[in-house]
Amino acid sequence: MGGRPPKSVEQHKLDGTYQKCRHADRGTSLAPLEGVDCPDSITGKARELWEEVVPALCRAKMVTTVTLPTLEHAFFWWMKAQECRQLVENAGGLEPYLLTLGPNTKNAMDLALKYEQEYQKIMAQFGDTPVNAARVRGNVQQDKPDTDAILRIMGNG
View 1 (tube, one colour):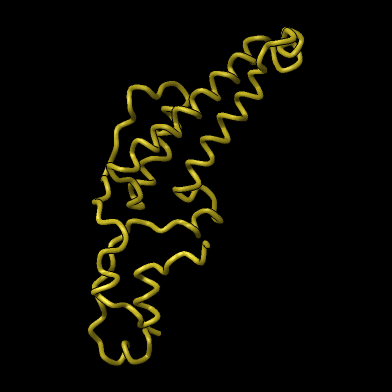
View 2 (cartoon, rainbow, N blue to C red):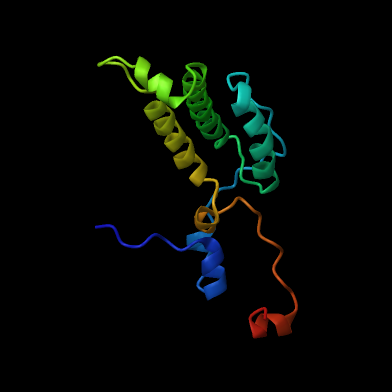
């Protein structure tokens, strides 16, 4: 089973194997959103982070109506992680907090790490690190094909 994933339309065009009958309907045709307001469900530091991150994703044309709920879900997990960290901070730090834990009590720091991992998994889809960014196929529209015959013959460089 398995096999390798299909080539992107862009790769078929670069390789000269593009066939309109086979490849024209691939990919997404969703229009990217220009700007997105932070949902009311996201509060505190998570709201501040949204205001820093999401506009950049919009400028990169990576936010559509389909990806918006996924982003909200990611920031929800980050907000929950910050709430757990605040609980530890309110107890006077990690050591005093750990002393208050009973035998069957969940550790808020463990939960914070779990929630942050959920956030990171989702944000990886949007290229949150250079490695993840190399794996992301953006929603950028193709440039118009070059009409200069010499450049086409030379392979654009």
